[in-house]
Image (cartoon, rainbow, N blue to C red; front, side, top):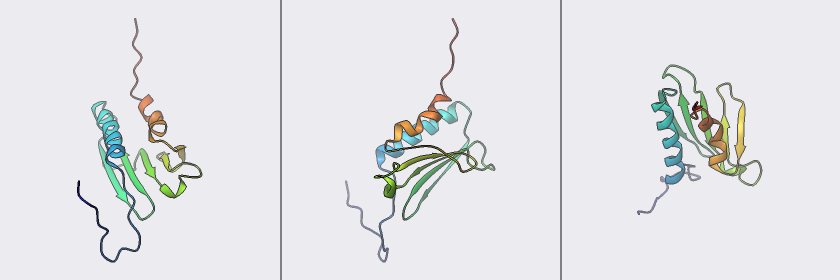
Length: 112
């Protein structure tokens, strides 16, 4: 693997997702698309956060926002699941429990 060099003139490094984190999020996104629940996504990288938005339709506001804020790692946890209206639905130190409420929507009841 290569070395990542900061952009010249940047005062602080930009926050991003690791390959495994993004792989986990994109895997969930793909399963939600296959189920017909999501149609579009957006990714944003800021100085103090990285965010993945999932949309039901491209013209809507995002249904969920998965946010990583490393500055909150020692306090509430750096991962947050934010709902459509901006309320924090789940926060934690690990990505998997934060994604659990979305994954529950994929479970289907199988009758006998």
